[in-house]
Every structure is written in structure tokens, then in C-alpha cells.
Length: 283
Ligand code: C2E
Ligand code: MG
Ligand code: MG
Ligand code: MG
Image (cartoon, rainbow, N blue to C red; front, side, top):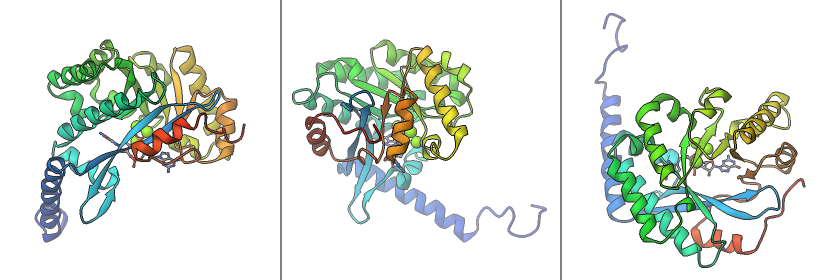
């Protein structure tokens, strides 16, 4: 308040407008849930030994009646700040589980779908997680068909309750993947502490693999360490054959990225997986 005009003025018209806009998006999101405007797209995760597509990541999309198909960057922050992510995420989980159940008839019965979770979903009511487990059980799905993805940074910040909830989900048989690994400033030593099955190397380290020997060294070290800890490694955001070749040489288990396919509707993913193994670029 002493810093001169405009410095601490909380109620400039701009801020008021922004607050109104936020409120409007929250209302729109609630409506979107009720009107079933959300959909899941699926991106294949390719086994780098042979090219089989036996996993996919479910990614949330909002088919907005005026604005068209929206990606999470356009609405996830509002879903999180309004708390609606808990309800939306519950829908995501159930929708993904229903989809794997349908795929079991046509695809590999061991097919796994991963679902991204926001921290609020793990901080809340324990009944939520039990509900998911019951849903999976009612479908007759093996629990390991579902992989929970949680960002590395989240585990570091929220430790206690979130780690407990993840442990419970894992005890029920779901798998857990540490997403965006490398962005959360945790050391490799932290990996031992977390109760996880998979590690996803963030796209930012894959991007410059070819030009940045430091990034390559980091990926190689992460892969070796992960394997020693009994974890499998997925590389995210693989866009070129050269990146793919380096990752294969480094012993990476799985890759996901535009070099294989962008996220796509469920039917397209099934058609792709049914064609058999993907060609491994750079092999
Ligand atoms: P993420 O979990 O790290 O997912 C990977 C993101 O990278 C996806 O963006 C995917 O489309 C994109 N991607 C994949 N391959 C490539 C590539 O080769 N190049 C580039 N440039 N990008 C690639 P998307 O679908 O926009 O999702 C962004 C983020 O939103 C996700 O990052 C995840 O953190 C979050 N998210 C998505 N769906 C959900 C959800 O259902 N619930 C929650 N809580 N978060 C979600
Ligand atoms: Mg993810
Ligand atoms: Mg990621
Ligand atoms: Mg991310």
C-alpha cells in the first residue's frame, strides 16, 4: 500500500473481470459435467521392445458447444481452483475403466489405461478411492488394468496424506506412475521412498536428447536407476526417430509421443492397437 499507485490495488476493473470470468468458467464446467461435454482421448504407449501397444494414457478433452474441442491447458486450472476437478476426475476414472472393460473383448486382456490424478482427488474423502475400486471390481476388471499417474511435484509437496492414499490404491492392485519426472526437483534417491511401478520421464528431457548430451546422460542414468529399483520407464513426448533410437539404446521400456500418434478417440486407438505392433522409428 505504500508502494505507490497500482501496486497493491486488488480491485482494479481488470481483476474484477478476471474474477467474473473465473466464476463463469466454473459454472460452465459444472454444466459440462451435467451435459456430458467431457470426453477422453487416448494416446498409445508403445513397448520399445517389439512395438506392441498394450497401454494408453487417457487425456481429458472438453467438447465445448461454442469453442470446440478444448485441451486441459484451457480449463484444468479452473477445474482445480474451483474444486470441480474432484467430480470431473471421478468421471474420468470411471469412464476410463468402462473403456478398458470394453477393450478387453477385442484387445490384449492385459491392456492398461492410465488416468491422471490431481492432488485434490487424493487429499479428499477416502470413500472416493474405495468407490473406484468397487467400480473396477463390479466391471470384473483386474485392478492392474488401471494405472494412476501422479506428477512428481505433487508427491514431494503433499507427502503425508497423498502418499497414504496412493499406497491404499496400490494395495488394491492398481498401478502407480510418477508423471513428469525430472520437473519436481526430487533426487533419484526419493524414488526409493515412493510406492510406484512406473516412471515417466518428462518431455522437456526428451526434447533435446539429440543435441544436449547432459539430457541424454540424465535419461540414461534415470533408466538404469529405475530398473535397479524394479520400475519400468516411459519416455514422454517422443517426437522424432532420432530421439526414439537414443531411448531404445538407453534401454527405455516404453515411449509415448507424436512420433507414434497424437491422442485420439477411443475407437481410433482400438483400431490402431488391433493393427499389431507399431513400427519403431530409428530401430
Ligand atoms: P501429461 O499427463 O504429462 O500428459 C502428456 C501431455 O503431453 C498430453 O497433453 C499429450 O497430448 C502431450 N503430448 C504427448 N505426446 C507429445 C509429443 O510428442 N509432443 C508434445 N508437444 N506433446 C505431447 P494434454 O492432453 O494437453 O494434457 C496436458 C496435461 O493435462 C497432462 O499432462 C496432465 O497433467 C493433465 N491432464 C490431462 N487429462 C487429465 C485428467 O483427466 N485429469 C487431470 N487431473 N489432469 C489431466
Ligand atoms: Mg500423464
Ligand atoms: Mg507427463
Ligand atoms: Mg504434465
